[in-house]
Length: 258
DNA sequence: GCAATTGTTGGGAG
DNA sequence: GCTCCCAACAATTG
Image (cartoon, rainbow, N blue to C red):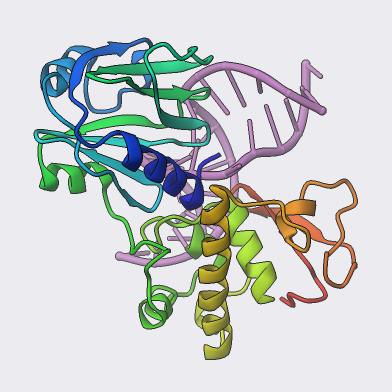
């Protein structure tokens, strides 16, 4: 599920509920989601601390406390959420933090990523690793220099070390709306095309953040990309699909020329 | 049974 | 060093 818009939705929901809440107890129901810590260490370090305002960088959700920092990367299927203690539990709940009011829960079907614990900001940066500027704030110049390399456009945009926050659906949607073929080499793009990619990215992200996901809006590629004989919502010609970086890639061969 | 899934990592080839 | 491809992680759905 999560790309930048989903994670930003998680962050906004938690920003309303989490700050000021104190951890009373840590219940790890499946330690398969703990990446650099253990159930004991998580409890020992978090209990007694109060959460402050949540942040986001790319697909990383950063939950600082007045002590250590809890990091969440949702992978394909993870979702952190706040719930009243009495609220029904969901399937695949892996970790529950009991708070002085309510609970912070982490649900994750596939457990591809999970939770990290960092003692301070440097440790936080270390856990996140090499990561480019956030796709939501990157300026036009910074975007152009991020793409100043010989890789394929799709591959570069998907690489979190280049630009943080874009996933498979978003990159296809942005390339399609900007009418640039995802197989093109970045360094072969004209300034107009780079500019169009940047402006389109901002527009697609703003709309997606409003929906908390990449929405299947009428006139968007995302609405039709999984159809059997998918057709371009603009020119109605057949869409092409193949794999780039092991991910299904969909584009319109008429409007996004190679 | 088979393929596919909105993510990332590490290894190996070129 | 860069780029690309693959397998692996895991569990479910069509």
